[in-house]
Image (cartoon, rainbow, N blue to C red; front, top):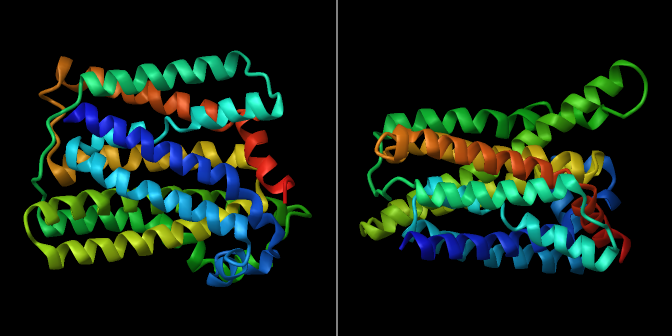
Length: 301
């Protein structure tokens, strides 16, 4: 079952990353005063390319749900980074961006890391921690999600020019990226809780987790688009992908009881594989070939 879960997760990743390639920098055409506001999405939904690309990304979510029904969260999340390889291939074949040593090392790291995680994966569980523990863990995730919105009035007035304002704008951009990564991480955790509750027949509780998943996905999307208004994709993507992969995986033992101690070398192989996969993700997400592919989505308008 874990193997099928990996296939489903990779399929979801391909859809997610194709969506990114088609939509991400459409946000740059929207004035900065719409950053971190619902009006940003209001502007973007009038763009047919952005709307179609977002719909394509949403199609990937049922595949992620299917993956979580068959494999532990610890396996599914790193697999969601594998779709970056598609962006690299598109950048090389469509734009003539020749992959270099960085890209080769990154692809090898992702493949080896995901393979290691699959081989050393803990057993999938449907157990949950207490409600208090889950609430505490998700509160820690919620803080960086909410941070840029709490500072929205200052964000609106920040401009990338002049001394302190440059530093403030950079800090704001970092908060937006962290907010997006943690928002997508919340969606992954809520999706896992949703699948477990549905499997247990707790439909009402499942609906609640579905609602939080939609809310976090919406906030993450606004944060991501706001970050892309201010920073190039090669700066936004590495941190965002790393956060959305690492946070759910690190919380999986606490929330879902996924025991790493029962895996080879007491979890050392699993941790090493995750580190390799995340390092490859960061390298590839910051690649000029991948960034060029994302940039092309905007230039073709």
